[in-house]
Length: 324
View (cartoon, rainbow, N blue to C red):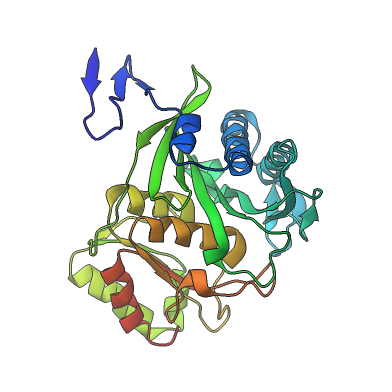
């Protein structure tokens, strides 16, 4: 049985419920004239994704008894995922510097011209209840992170481990989605030229504990409910923003509040890569005052509020959340 899907590039179809495509990730990158070194890094994340997806099926999700640099308890899967990504990046021979959510400091790999920031398993606390989680990465052509901003990224992406393993990717030529085919052990182009509409009545409200201290956030929530927006919040940044990009509408918010004025999300390893993806899909990402991608990286652990998604929805949230 074959169902032809017209929105997929070059005749992707489902054959016995398996995705097949004529365009591999490798071919897509060549079509975009991506330089060889950057291709190697993207392939490294693709390879790591297949290993992490397998690990999610077989590794216990328990705590290690250790905490990461942000004071969060580490899961065995966090540590394993980080090791998988590190090994894949080191094998490229072109990565000189990495920064990971799971590491206390940046790590020098050598003299490679690229610096890579990543969260190996974002939303890992959702694993034990079988919700989707993901990997986030941003790539710079640099030998340092401090002093850069998100606009300096040359590529970014996020990998979703759900019913399918998929990769959202930008090399600053728009945003595409690639799906992993386990039989062929390869990623194939499944959607390209992804686009976020100006408006869209869908919201993913992070950090609702802020409503205890912020009446403006309460007012924004009431507005969304009164205007009959659809609530779509998983508890994970990767699946929620993945949904906004694929549905082409909506907003994800994570404001600060008195106990955490800059929120919880990290500029370098989470917000910058996601902001680049969303802007490349014609969306918007701000901290309530300025573009996320304009914010200087002054420290590896810097956090930021974030409002991200459809342009008009972000601007509306900024109007409500007048004290960013």
